[in-house]
Length: 621
Image 1 (spheres, rainbow, N blue to C red):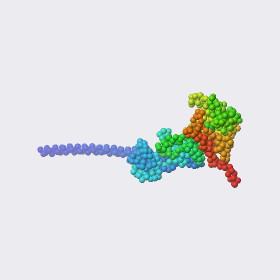
Image 2 (image 1 turned 60 degrees about the horizontal axis):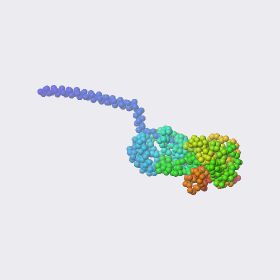
Image 3 (image 1 turned 60 degrees about the vertical axis):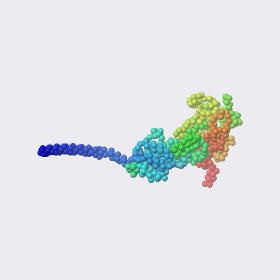
Image 4 (image 1 turned 30 degrees about the vertical axis):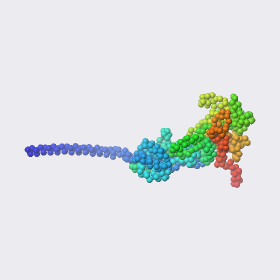
């Protein structure tokens, strides 16, 4: 029995040995296969895909950063800086490298104690939905003290880096804001129309004025640089750099001193002033009041401040120089008179009798002077601003001839100034009324149009340009705000008889310097001769009632207007002033216009303003 057991044990042992050897072979083969796969994979990674994975590994350490271009500066005609770039600090955030976004937000809210917490919160709500790997700049500037505060705690907030950038600043604040314009954050609508390559790393764009019109010149082109970072996103060193191309500087035609002076004269009044060189079209002063501070918009204006400006009843956002449309009143009388005598509708020497009104179809059209002006020729009609003279003249001319007389001076058309959004104004005609109103023209409307009322509407810029064209005897120029080396003469108005032009201009000179001139009291002290024309425009119809400024709301008072140029023989400056609802008080348009011209001569032509002093200096030399 034991022998039998031994035999069975040997057989079983042999079988187990075979089974073990088989398993060993299988394990060995399996191990060889695994090693073969591993070697194959290592070969693939090390040789076949080496460049790809090396680039990915390098990408974890080296990143590409966009360098925004430096925006071009803006200077006035005398190289005084009007728009600058100030170094400030900002925070750049990368979401995928941040541990706790909400904790970072709270820390930043504490540091930016000058910014409403809600504005910071709104930024982070949008930030959470953006590309995780892309860098975004916090749209708020940090002062040096705030930057130092963040630097102390920066190790607690990975994915956030402190960096320096240039911020647009306007040293003169609200002065000339409607000419300069301002920059602001790029909005969704603008983003759709921009070249993404040109605006990489940039989040501001010109919104209005010169900043917008010359955006391509001022903006420049972005650059790039490689930076080495650690795993927490901290910059270790800068590698290769392709510098950004800065925007070009721009020199304006404005004189900031004259601009400040003109704005100070307007004070709290609403209105516009345009002063320009009639020979070249260079705009010397571009005033729209009230104004606002463009610095508020650079980093994004808060809701409270924006709503206060938007809801201001004086509407400071309106650029009255190019978008304020006003009845021109009597300021168009010289242009109408010139058209009438050039086209022989009347002789400048012919006199009519003015009893103080004109009766047409049982309706009495009153003159501003109730007792009338008596016998009136063209000169007296302009000097004393006789309405009745132009009422009668308009019936002889008709609205279409009045239109044709005024159109060459740019009424009812864009001036072409280098600012977007200019309004055309209205120069009515029979065709215009049929097309716009769908109604026929009535002769009673012609009478009203003859004194710049009715459908007639002009902007201060159109009025200044028309005055400049008259001053330089028909040379049509384009108003512009950026200086250039050549004057662009668009055309020359046909002059049938130059003496006609000189007679009208002489009448405008008499407005300023003759005994009965409507602006005589404002020009008594001037050492040079200037030409001008005052005007008053009704805001609403009186319906044959009496005008009583004391019983009317201030915004129903008449607008006050003035146009002028000086010197009469060789004009250096032309001006248009519109003071909304100024009525006929002491702060009307005429004294403002005269003072601006006076200041201009003090700044640039002291020999004309102080002729006696200049003579003394010459004798001393």
